[in-house]
Length: 441
Image 1 (cartoon, rainbow, N blue to C red):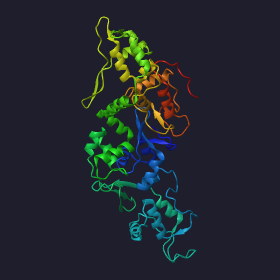
Image 2 (tube, rainbow, N blue to C red):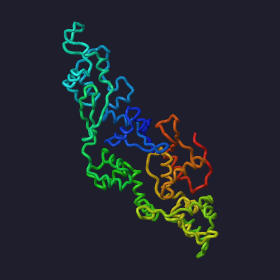
Image 3 (cartoon, helix red, strand yellow):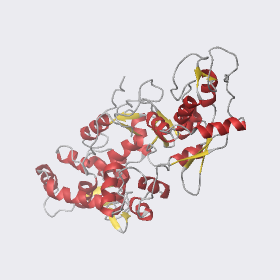
Image 4 (cartoon, helix red, strand yellow):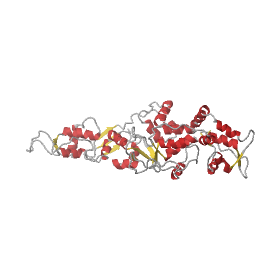
């Protein structure tokens, strides 16, 4: 998903590496540091992308040396403007060098004198008694000489033992440590996070270093944080634990009563009479295509953590030819295909789970579409291929955003606005009962 307020540009790890002149493993290392912008999957292969402006802002504060490489500017640090032959002192250069290193205090003059003695810094352009005008009383440099040196190519390396960032000046080899921002590691049980939310260990470690994460690692506070800051991971954990299915069942019992039309549908079979449905009759009984009914008969029981989250389709009464008890099929459709049951009984749209909250201008990709649609109508995500097939056949609106459409934020594959997705879900009374829609302009 791409947030409605996302920046104009999103970038992949490969693009970050290219822009700032590093390798992809370095970008992967940055992603473990505190405050590095969170990514989200998008495009073919679910490539991880991030907000380009957030990445640039983070680098400017945390790793200014690498940030400068990506600015494509002759003056990335914002050094004072002036004529190229203006004279500047060693104290001026100390302040400019501090800007390049992201420090608040000027670089010590003794450090710069060391650079001069080792000849890793340009020698002064003017010295006292050189008989040039204007007369100078101390060593001075032309502005261009100083700015060229401050804006020189730099490299950084990390100090493995402490985890801090160490800036290495290739001119003099002097090290100056900069905290990576991770500080003292929170006292959290990373393994418990991995087990509870089904994420990888690097992801769990990254969460623990994110600003606002509960420092004491209290499970209840962690769960609240994940629910607020990582809602998709939290929701997936609930489904795995079976709590989502139980909540849906409770909501169904409390808030959804069987429509009177459903009673009529049962009554037409006759009291105490067992009505048999042939294979080709299952779908049409509920206003669905024959192949839909056939696909239902293949549904198997699904368990998560030892709990049944989906019952298998009822077994046939007999084989050769196969036939099913209509009451058993009705009960299964009512519970596991509530939107189809609503269409069959004449009720309004009925959802197995409420639609997630979010800005209606958020952009959802095909995987988001499949998850929201499936969870709302049957309690489990649809297959990505299913939504793609509907899209290709024109059975859902054409994507609101396409790659290289010139709009912002940039997308790498088809995306729909959240409003479009919700309109599709709430307007469908059952599968296969609407005509192909006209693609959006």
